[in-house]
Length: 148
Image 1: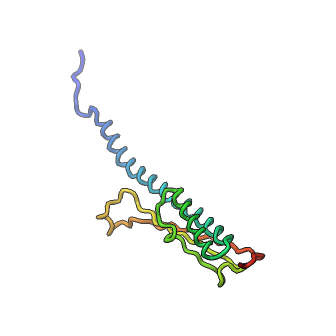
Image 2: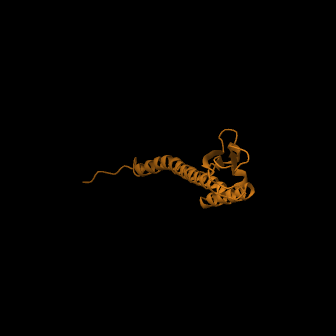
Image 3: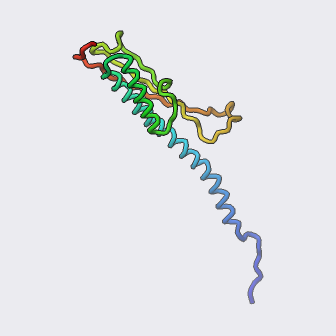
């Protein structure tokens, strides 16, 4: 003869697994999304700073160099999915005056603010909504450069 079946714990293991998986997977997915966006920002500012400094020092003049540097920053930022204004993100600093004097150095600094994904605006007082990612590169002006 067969014993009668009880319905006390039937299916509870599946529900516990699903609840635990959701509690663990949602923060993990959020962390992966945030870190991926920060890594993209790091790639963008590193490349933008390097290319901005390099394009500035090979230009014929300071104005042309600034235009080229801004264009290089815009390309590097857009390549990683950032639509920040390249002129606002770029800061150029020269070691001498005039800026493109032979033997001097030009530093390019890029600052990009990365917003945290899926953070509602009412949380602004408790959690910072942006993380600043920046990079700086220095490029030397050729010692044998002819001034124009």
